[in-house]
Length: 113
Image (cartoon, rainbow, N blue to C red; front, side, top):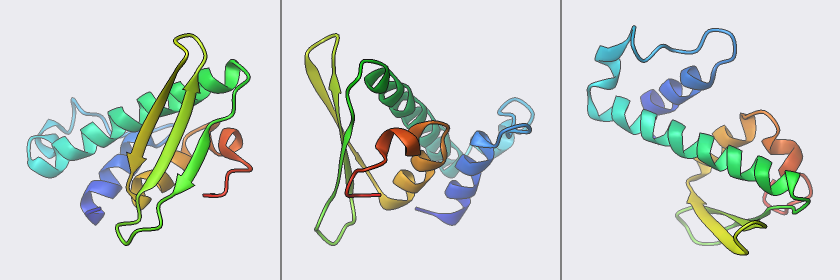
């Protein structure tokens, strides 16, 4: 992941003083800013799904890919729909996901952490 994009995502998740999209609209007009917003939305949705999975009493499974691209597979069993959500994250995205509240605790015991 581009270091600028990573820093933007980190700033968007910062507790207390997150980067305001309205105040810094010019930052999010370019391709890097739009990518940071997409990553943030994706990670927030995954955090919410992990919380829902944990609340239903299920533990998410996490597997690290063995290929050279370093993808991390997060597999969630969704109780309400009897379905499975599988998400593929880059290593940097997975590290950012682990920083979100409650995620590391929910994924403790997985072989990928």
